[in-house]
Image (cartoon, rainbow, N blue to C red; front, side, top):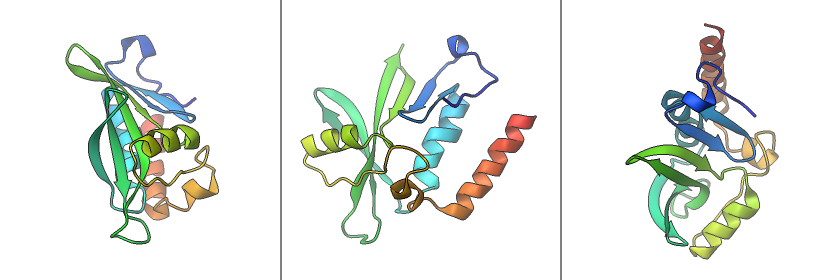
Length: 144
């Protein structure tokens, strides 16, 4: 599992998880890794929408891929609250069965992304140049 080394898990003010890939600790890591990736490093002009699944609020993220008039849901976010603030974010981007179950129950079109960042379905959707720039920035930050 990937971690932000600077903040011990027990001291983190927030936790972000891309289920099946990694966990990041601290608000800035959640913002700069899991949320940033989903919203800025993938093709398809993402659009987030609040929904309810089994009585719980979630966010589905739509992407207009090949046909801008036919967007599909490729990610679902689940939030956990502590003292009125988001304390944990879970992304089901890389969990094909879970993503299909949630999105199918909601009656929405879905496109799965494979089981990991190495999956061909996932790699085909990445904005490669933007990803390489982001990855280099993350590497430089980790060195300092």
